[in-house]
Image (cartoon, rainbow, N blue to C red; front, side, top):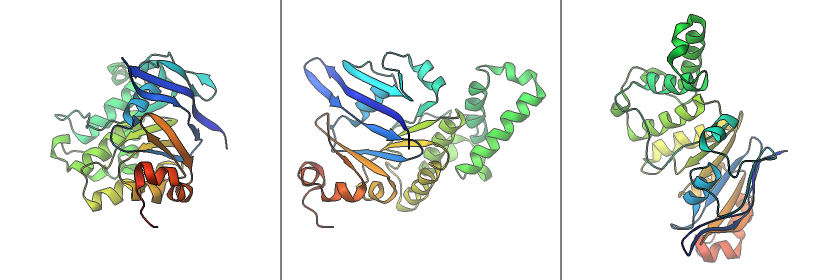
Length: 249
């Protein structure tokens, strides 16, 4: 299986604080890679450097063997790298359908010029319906984003990201604040996404991560201290001491 995304000793410092230090990660095509660690481990900062929101202090990021370390955000997105955030970033005053359609229009032309072509508009609408069906929101297409439950809002954010037709999707704590039922539904959706694209997941719910991930990287104090399958991570003594605790599984 080919490597889609990798880093080489990636580091990010803020003054004298090393938020990310010599982090190395390999993400395989159409696999689900999870990144876990205690609060303050550097996970979100790591994401921000991977996706161009923060510049790296040192080290490199490669996407499909292309060095993207110094590439601006809009160029990174064009390559097919999309992400979500811990806080919902929705057009609250727009409908569910409009939220996804706007993202699809941007992907297919970058402006509302697409409205001048009936064929182009039909293509965008068809893709929007397909995306809503995939994230389970087709029956709520006419609802406004602020009318959705929190879980559905998170699903909508995933739908908006998918409308950008990513090759790899980075999700930042998508189940935070969800009920058990909502968590199970979005976990199933995330797992299903790997049929078509590569997924990287930062998540605080360790048991969820263990149940859906192909491989896991563990961060602590800005460093990746372990990497392996869920079973390997469960048994890793260093991970137990740093994060999981001495739980018996």
